[in-house]
Image (cartoon, rainbow, N blue to C red; front, top):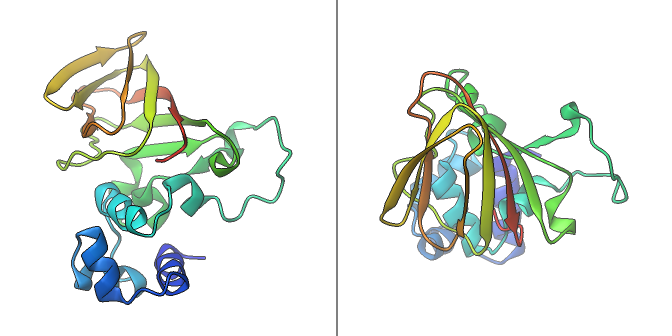
Length: 190
């Protein structure tokens, strides 16, 4: 199921009109309409606001197709992409900037584990986002500028972070090399 179809399905299942969903999520009615028609894709922050209004997490939204509930081990190709830009294929250039690959179906666990890749110049968006969780991560390669509330720091290979995800935050690769991060979020609300 395409993203626009999923949003429309969830909206109608919750008895919401496009206008009602737009008002609850703080986005425009036009954006909801264009997403549902497949004419545009939301930013990470916009999709988060839409899903919060339903309510549903990223992991629940993108995990509707996992067939094996008892799977324990995952090969690299089995990690599920949950970054809307890559999933929606906004455009081929943008689709290569940030990859958020999830281990398994986070909606079935109390922990969400991600393998994140940020190309040089990649950014989660100028609008800081937040969600109901705590998150932590370790930078495996490259460097990332992390903003959490009014704090900002550039972290490099081997550095780590942990914070309350209810504080608005942003990730941005200001380096010249790809940045690889392994992160965890509990509960899985991203």
